[in-house]
Every structure is written in structure tokens, then in C-alpha cells.
Length: 211
Length: 211
Image 1 (cartoon, each protein chain N blue to C red):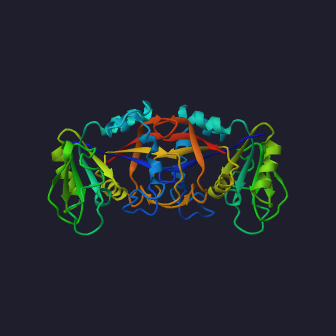
Image 2: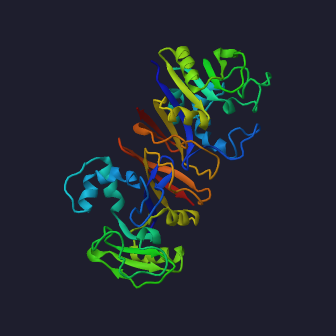
Image 3: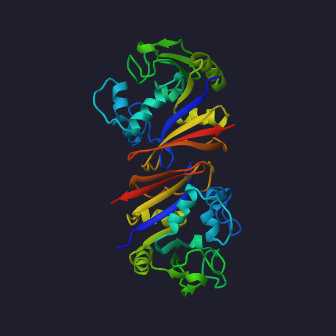
């Protein structure tokens, strides 16, 4: 059965998004600072059709986390488009060719038909809960990995439910002071650090979630 | 001039003590879990007059952080004895021969005569603020390092005031869920990871504080 993983950038004080999130600023004030280490890499730029960037340990991590993923799961807020029933004109933040290139299952309370995009990404909207989303994602992923893409609430729910097998944290040496915390409402999971990759910009720690 | 450092164990959700701290349980519920990696080491046990323990990367870290320290600074709560004027019978948590073996400056609002202990530890009580404590500690330390021993509030004050040169975090893979957070009220410090030591129990990251 496919394993369930999540990789996410977290500030030293535990935030995965800054305060005052809005449609114009979906990761909150200062939230961009969580991702600058990735934006600077060769691999991130290549994935987004850009030249240049650093070929370093961070770049290898960016490559690593996007390989072998057979399906993604994300929360409604990460997909965006506001609360309530869908505005069908909203097709996500990522343009016509989103960087997922596989099935994406969006957790929502509001039904919507599957939305195929260019480049192989298909957004599927799941209204019957996280277990159902995971079952569907496992079928789509086959032998490959199911990745919980975010945001905080989706990761929390899968971790609290004991459905997450691996949490790969990119620990960014910044203090955001406010925003959305990752490790709240998750109970007391048993985590084992199984890999650490250090760079001058960020410390990547892969944790196995012991069931 | 001596540099100012701090090493402290922090849970993945940012706590350096558990909830419901009390005289009977000074590091709060679950707070012991922050230090189990250290208790298991050869170096910690040796420092406390005990046999056995693991000789591993964690043990080397325990050795490292206690070497070259010429003076410690700690908050009143870490020294203990309750709030308000001193009960002179209280001489700290550590018995007759505390593990510091050098000058310790205790931040307090209540004056008290210096308290020499066995093994070279002298507790000095500083009532005129963190800058004064640091000046006195620098004099005592000479060329050696001044270490901010804790608790959270003392570390926060020195970090926020730009007086800390290095923060060495032992990132423990546990979720405490509540307690005393380290990186609150510290502003937006610039931190550079300069050394990472990985073990199966904990991830040690040494950050330089950029002034």
C-alpha cells in the first residue's frame, strides 16, 4: 500500500503560514520567507519553467519531495477560491499547468466536478472526509506515495488520525511570531528523525511517524 | 570579549517546559521528555557522578556545551525557591555541589548575598537587570563563554536585546501541546544555522545570531 507523506516548511517558532492570510496573500504576512530557500534552487526554478538557481542540498531536497508522488491531498484553503459553494471560474493558484502533474484531492464541504488541467493535474473534490480522500488518493497513487500538500489543517487532521507515515520538515531559521501553527491539535505522535539534511539556509528533518 | 551562548532543548512545537510548572515539577508536565536524550548519555551521567550511559553524538554534544563556559546567567524561576523575597534556606535545585562549577548570575528583583557552593559554583543575585548581569558575567568569564542557562524568559530577553551571539537548539521530536514557548517576544532575529548534529533521538542545530 502506498505510504502517506507530507513535506512542509516551518518557522523555528512553529508556523507554516504568516498572519492575516487573504486571497491576495494566501500564505500570510512573511509567509514567503518560509519558501525562499526553495525559490533559490535550480530544481524549483526548473519545475516552474525558469532558468538558473542554485544546485545544492536544498535543490536536491526539492527534487526528492516531488519524485514518486502518485497523488496529492490538500485542504480547501490551500486550493483557494474562498469559502462556501464554488465559483467555477476558480481553478487554483497555479495557472493552467499546475506543478502537480497527477491527481489532487481537495478536501471540501462543497461538491464540484473533477477539474482536469494541463500537464496531467486533475483536481478532484472530496466532500466525505479525510478517510475517503485518502482511499481515493491511494487508488490513484498505486505503488507511489500519497503526499499531503497542506495547509496546516489538512496535515493536522491526517497526523492526528494516525494516517501519516512520514513528516518531512524544512525547519527555516526565522521567527514569524504569528500565523498558522503546524503542530497543534495533533495529539502526542511518536516521531523518529530518520534523515537530516543541513544547508546554510534551512535544516531538513525527515520524521517517521511510529504507529 | 566573551561570546554569549545558549543551548536549550525545545520540542518540535516550540516548548522548553511543559504546562503546569510547580515547585514539585519545575519543568512542567512532560518537560522531562525534553531531556531524556541527555540523561541517556555517558557525558551527562558522568557529570552527575553516575556510571554507564551511551557514548554517542548526543554525549559529545553534552560534553561540548559544558566546556569553555566561564559564567552562567539564569532566571529566578530556573533557580527556584518561589516568588518574592528569598527564603535563605533555598540554595537551588542541584544539591550541595551544583553542576556549574563557576559563577552563576541569577536574575531577580530581590537582593541576596552571593552563595558559594561546593565544587566552585557561586550563585550571585543580580537585581539591576539583564545588562548588568551580562557585564558581571563577562568579567567573571574572561575569555570564556557566557552561557544563558534558561529559562525561556531569560533567553527571550537576551535574544530580544541583541545580546545573544549563538543559540544551540536541541530539537526534540516530541509534541508537548502546551507549556512555555521559547521563541516568543523575541522580535525577528536573523539566525544562521552553522552546525547540525543528527542523532536518532534529537536534532542539534547551532544558530549564529547575526547582529
